[in-house]
Image 1 (cartoon, helix red, strand yellow):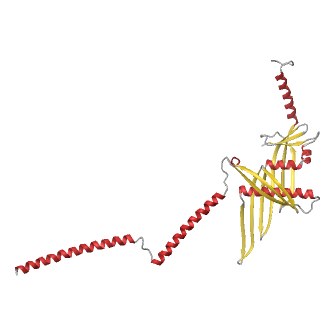
Image 2: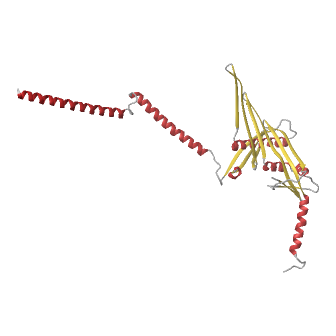
Image 3: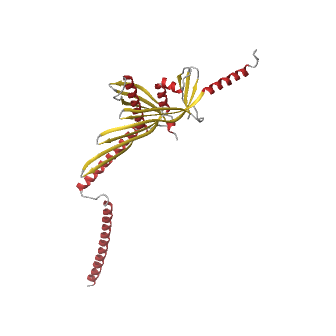
Length: 136
Length: 187
């Protein structure tokens, strides 16, 4: 049985295409790298690099995080507003660990380096939140 | 005279027969003796006291071997092996200290926590992957000049969860857990 406005499935399909297109248009890809050094139990250096991807990334979306977003927030603003959540998420994504310890004449010292190698992240900017997910 | 000659002949014949019998018996006795010697060669190896010592040593070796077997069995039981279709939970506590020149207690806490997380990651990697250890001693004129031990770990850690964080007197402790599955290591 047809509805009054004609073929409802057709209109639904058109709406979904428009919606998907709008979402796709608002999605962008970023290259993110993160690294910090701990020396003798004290944090020495921490750096987080974020840049636009110059060419489309390949890979599948893995676990993602949703962070609150205001009108014209960029990815940098989002990360600045929610640093702990984002850093915890990066830890979940996986960090490469390199630990070196040396004991010279019974005196111990160590250096631990945790690194997220440059990874492509897909960021979907929605109305109230941004969905950040790594591409692997 | 005739009888005497016959008697002589009989006597000589009997002596001859007796000599043969004696030879036969001697041969038999020597054979038996040889076989007995051959049989007892294995058992008689040493004087009585020393044999006891050897027996005691053998007993000790057997007992030590059995003890070694028990110890290796216990070690194998204690060593956790990640079997198929099973998961293993590893829990560690990492420690970190805040730097001296922090602008606020909150910053000190955040920095100490970051260091503690790194320490916990290192402990997880050490437990799962193991540690590479290198040692070097420099000895000059019969004296140790320099003793160096270097350890290193390199690993990729992901999906580790921070369970609890405590910050007391400048020391931050982070309890971290990671759930390992056999499929994660399948090649």
